[in-house]
Length: 135
Image 1: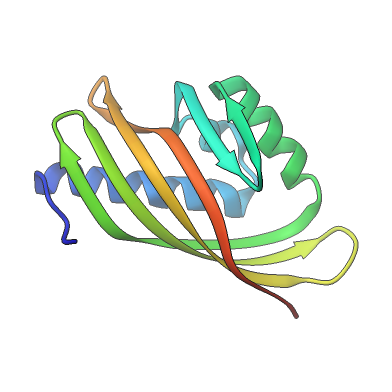
Image 2: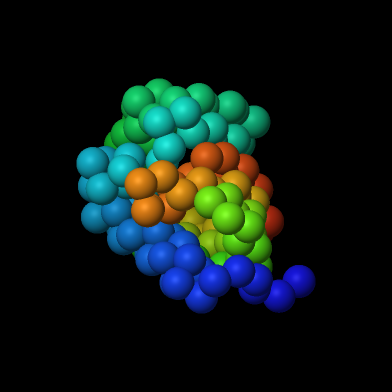
């Protein structure tokens, strides 16, 4: 598929993805949380986490296990229809845990987005690890 929908929305979605990644790298829970819709759903590693506050708590707990994370992503597909969008995002992460060996992983997010008050938010993020290597 190719990217479809207004270029302004596709750029704003790209900025959402960049803001998300930057917050991950900085371990900034406040900035990270603001990317989610209030009733968002995060599907990750067999878990379903519903609601912005619960998603934040889950993320803060997970991030406590890492001293350093480098997170980068790029959209492979953006489909905008009105105030909703579907996005496929490829990610590469370098993860340095507090304990244990560092690892590199590549994954894919399948996202549903919603525009609220002129700003895009994640309504549902579903993450799959495609490849993981200890380094």
